[in-house]
Structure formats: structure tokens, C-alpha cells
Amino acid sequence: MNCIPGHGQDHRTLEKLFNGKNNTTDDRNMWLIPFNKGENHTLTIDFGTIKTITAVRFFNYNKSLEDSLRGAKQVIIKVDEKLVTPKKGITLRKAPGFIEPELDIGQDIKLPFMQGWATDAIMPLQRMSKNPMSLFQEYETIGMPIGFCVRINLYSTYGDFYYIGLNGIELLD
Image (cartoon, rainbow, N blue to C red):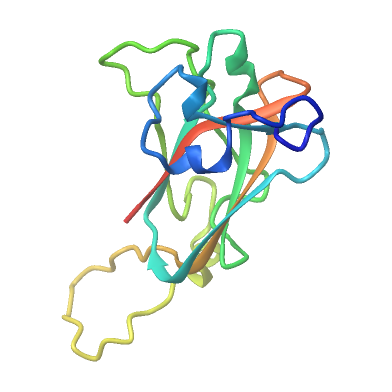
């Protein structure tokens, strides 16, 4: 937002996605950027080293009932440029626009997102353990994506024509 004339002091900046204050209606703890339909709105998270990721937890934009239309609707997630969600993306829930103390507005997207995927599409996303001391199991465990860089593309809002935003993101391991 700070690149738009007149918004040079806007506090809805990128680091708010990871400040841990996600279940809120306080826009000082939110991230917001201009939304231009058809353009890429991409978040790239570089860990600096290989990490195992089991899920991403999204907190959609939740400033008010009206402003919750700015929340991200369709997202695609890639790990090291490999899709871990279907090509058409995953639909995030719209935030309610208010906070109830017992209501957690976070939404977990387990990775790889398997609904609608065939096994042969998921297997290339997983790397086999290189540990020769691995134990014998009578069942096959599901491998999680392992990567260096997570990329999240935001493709649409819930109806706001000008802005797209999130309250926060948590990466789970």
C-alpha cells in the first residue's frame, strides 16, 4: 500500500503476516496490497534452508464485515516451484468481519492438498528419506512436501475490486 500516492505511512505491511496476532479485527496487524484482477499477487517465503512443511494456516482479512470482502479467495501454493495444491487453487473461507473470543478464524490447508489428486500427482512432491537407519513399517506413511521456498499466489478476493489482504499466515511442521 505504501507505493500508492497518499498511503506512504500505511501500517498494513508484509511483516504483519508473521507477527502472531492473527485472530483480530485490528488493521495494524494485517497485510493489504492493491488488487488488480488478472495480475499476479505472490508471496514468496524463503527459509534459507530445507524445511518440512505439513500445512499452511491462513487468517483471512478481517477488519470489519464490509472489509472482509478484501480477503483472499483463491490461492495456489508451490514448494520449490512444485504445485502442492491443484492448479485451479484452493478456496479460502471468508472472514466473519468480527471476533468472538472462542472463535478461531484460522483455516488449515494440509500439504500436499490431496482432495481431487491422484497418487501419481502427489508422489513427485515427496522426497524419500536418505537415512539408511529407517525402521521397517507394515504401512506406508504419507510424506510431506520438503522444500526451500514456499510460493503462495492470491488469485481473487471475495468481492473487493481494489484490495486483497490477509490477517496472517502460519507454516506448520
